[in-house]
Every structure is written in C-alpha cells, then in structure tokens.
Amino acid sequence: MELKDYRRQYTKGGLARATLPKNPLDLFTQWQADAAQAGLADPTGCVVATVQPDGSVRQRFVLLKGFDEHGFVFFTNYQSDKAVALASYGRASMLFPWNELDRQVSISGEVTKISEEASDAYFSTRPYASQIAAWTSDQSRPIASRSDLEAQYQRAVERFEGHDVARPPHWGGFRLKPQRVEFWQGGSDRLHDRFVYDFDAAWILTRLQP
Image 1 (cartoon, one colour):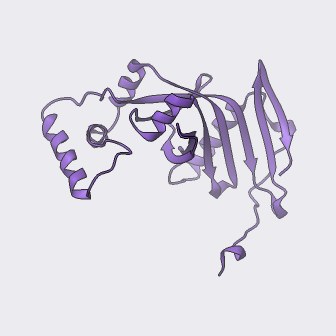
Image 2 (spheres, helix red, strand yellow):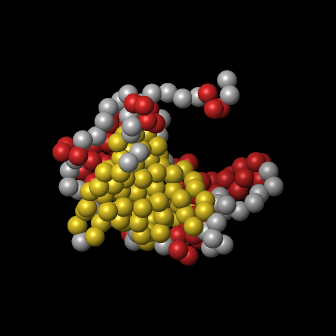
C-alpha cells in the first residue's frame, strides 16, 4: 500500500463548546487521566519544539512530570540542544499526540528553569539507574560508539558506589507557562473539533475550523 492510501475515520467522539470548562487546565487534567486509563504506552509523553540559536526548529520527545496553574514541567540536561535553545529564546511548544484516543493537545508559552530545590526534590525520586544516566550522558554531544557510552555509565556507577547520587548541576527542570492551549478531537469525514484557549488577562475560548 502506498502512503497516500493510508487513511481512517476518526470516531472516538466530539467536542461541544457548551461542555468545555473556562480553564484549559481542567480539560487537560481530564484528558491526561483518560490517556493513562486507556493504557497508552507513554501517556505523559509530548513533543517539545524549540527555535535553535541558528533559527532552525527542532522537536524531541520528553515526559511531562507535573503541571498546575504555574505551568508544565519537564526535566533535561541543561547543556543539551533543547536547553540551549530555551535559554536563547525562552519559548517553546508542547504537543501531546494521544492518537489512540483521536486527540491532540498543543501548548505554547514562555519557558523558565524551575528552582534548584524543586529539581533536587524530583531527582531524589528517580530510579538509581536514571540518576546515574544523568551523570553519564553529555546530551546532544557526539560519541564514537555505544561501548564508549557504556564505559561512561560504568565510571559513574563506580563514582557513586556506596553513596547517594546527587543531582548533577547541569541537570534540572523547565516549566512552560501556557499562553495558548489547543485541543483537537478527531471527527468523521475530517470534520474535526478544534478549540483554542488564548490567555489575555483571562482565558478566551475560540472554536477553529479543522
């Protein structure tokens, strides 16, 4: 089958303006719970898009680790390409591709680092192997081979043998404060439902054509 022949109907349901809350976080909370309950492999997974210092645009998959009225939090190496881009431009977009539910959520806004205390608190909850990995990888930098990466990991294991693993100073969290949140629900015959919340002193809700 050729790529042009792949298509399907979207039949999971629709969105009605009368049922939508005033605050997009309320709807996101419900949709995030639905994604987890549906057994998606990565219900907290999202694609973060950034504008790089050279003007190019890149995307990568990260895991959402918390959200509230202050924003959406994820963690990374502060020396990675994404972190360099966020430090340079300070804005990003997150896309949650819940395809199995015929849903997508796109969130855009300003991005800032969270406090060191908050990063410490989260890092302490990570599995040991993940803590070691944070010390292992010079994220986004070239490396000659898989064996070299495994050797770096082993050196980190030996460094912390018998000790708690402290958070690396180059690793921590970012918070995206939403200014635009779009909810997409697939509809039959490509008549999808799209609603966008824009923040201007208060949240303003608009239906968009599909």
